[in-house]
Length: 435
Image (cartoon, rainbow, N blue to C red):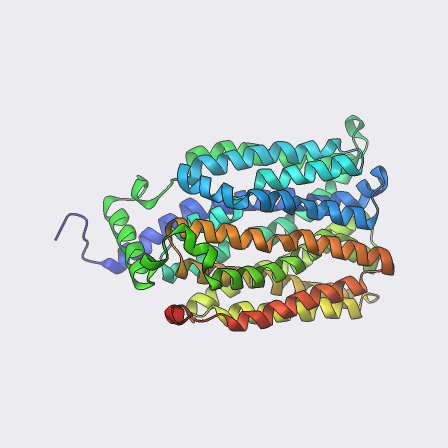
């Protein structure tokens, strides 16, 4: 028995995972929280900004979505750079640059500057989300990965739940220092990204082998467990970069996630407007009401991650939430003139869309490792985020034509339905060699 072995492997299992979770998950959540806040802050700012700088529903929707054009163009290169130089350095770069651009959004004066800064924001932010997914997957063994990813994923709905009313409250600064309320929203939400980006250099560790904050026995157990998982899941045959681009599973993952993201960002960028139109509330009250669907989504994400780990099942944990999300948006469209029912239906829609994400990435982690994990995650996220451009753009164009959100919500529900049905084609990890 070496000095790294212990007599109670169950105890080292518990203590090691607890240490890793406490060290990495809170900061990863903070980074994603700020990231999500800075890409979605225009949904609150638009309540005043659109009138100030003359944006129609279609031009706003296009500008909201053009973020993802810049994001997609640099997604795969960014993740490959992260794989080469390490997560710590590259994530710090991503956060500092996007924070500066997010704050610079306060200077937009019309359509051209709006489109330009949204594009640059997406370009700067590219790689953070899939990079974090791959990074966390390197630290958590199979049996605890789903819950870890679900906790991380709650940062998105938490940002919407907490950030929406907080950002709405900044309208109270309207006129201070000669700035409009929407300008204060951009200024204040960009600063935390710069601060957290600098802190990344001291908080993150690139790999378990370098984790001096684990004991030698804990490092040995964790590295051994992760290696055992890779051997069990057959990663040796899937560790090449080229495999990511020819594997049909990558394209199926991409298609499902694309449909989900189309619905997700169509809802994110238009939710305050939907709530305001349904309830007739003012800007600050709309911010608080808009937080309700995201509060429900937090609980749904946690429940989905726990359940998918508990039953060791991913496919139906992707399919069922997407179909429930479609039902929620369909009900919202039907009862848009009845505020209580509409907001309850939005809660179901937001919960379903968000709950499918941890199981999807949990299944991805079972299939890929090394550079193939980094490249395939970036490719999946890149293709999916075309939906981030499509969803808000379609919503804005249809809303401008019809004069209300009913048709737009029906179209988003259709995307989610197709995504849920497509998820039934996913095979179980143990069947991977049959695909």
